[in-house]
Image (cartoon, rainbow, N blue to C red):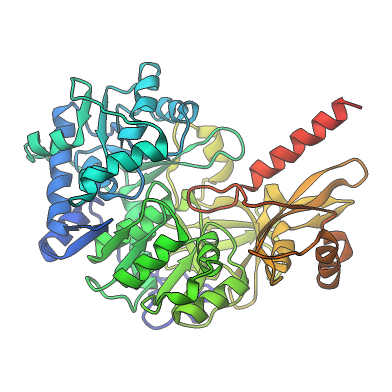
Length: 567
């Protein structure tokens, strides 16, 4: 790609190359290399328990040999249904080492969702927490599952936490599960003791062989399995490393709140940390006070996250009691980063927080603002090395002018192979010449910075006007009494759609609908001002903290249909 020249390349610092010479090797080889280079260095911290790179690699090998002994063959799918814990890292690399394809599965799935994903992927095995074992066992007869491997949080807790935790778990989840070792149910502790650790070598062709089936959120129709190769994931991780050029191999500590079952946490935290030999602080769920305590105690330098995570910390009443000065760099993804949040977080930590952009289909990152260098507020930044991006005019392949809104399309080595067993859906978004159609509406300025105005599907058309929810949300986030806001289009018999804002107030706020209405009318055109407001204690979110706009839209649609049927 030596002839590949775009306006944003002039913005790259000298340390960031336009193109990278990528290694073609299996993704799991990076764990082996880190175990050789950083063997006794701490790789993981989890609720008081620490593991070295050598220990993680040894256990991944043990799991790989055990899976092969159970009959796992190259290309077989293995579901990993775990929160961030040592087993999630060991499982991911162990499955790849055995020649399998990882199917990342959200631990919050209900049986119906789990059954769908396991059927669609054809997974032969699943690795899950003990409290999730009943779900897996219940749907096993309806799927291709042959084996269930069960582990528990207590398996990696230091004494006396490992003795106390089962009682906490029983109180918290009202369930105490005690699966037993059998021909098709396997205890993690048994596996570690009995596995030979002798892994049969599997030939992996990084550009061809899949490492991952990552299911999309399924906001429109059924979730689709995104096929990502070893090479897709390696190149995106190496791009990330080049972008964070001030970070040193083996010297950083990374806060791992983003779940590894989400592609953003998997690449920007787990794969990057393993590749660089950095220590990860694993947190199975986001609790603001726990995060503030762990930052002060463990002193992380890197903190990839999502806006809702940073907002949650900034609005904690005891925020200023904690020392967060160790944080040097954060790339925020999964949702737009309000400028006010960016500025406040940088003031509190002294570190840099920049907005990035990506999709499951792109492994995931394609754009980011420069961490150390010029950035543009409200922009998702510029494309990463070897990543090309354009704005196509609506429903055409004609390139838009700078500043003109259209669909963002992307081409690069991190773009997926396609959707699992869905050729038609793949053809709809991935052109023959390699351009991936994101479904996001945006524009590029003259310098090469990209801006998202909204999802094509989320655009509100009210009285003939196109309204982009993000623009209204930015105004709402600037209000000093609003903690979170999301804007949706709701059915309206006169305008077709009208704008509704769901608001979470800051603690102690007494803001009223009338005051918000007056505030919005001073800051945006009248046709964009929300006609309806609803105050809530919290908003529905994904595991990575992305607000589920679609849930709110469906909720409003149901209300409208019910009211219409009663007339």
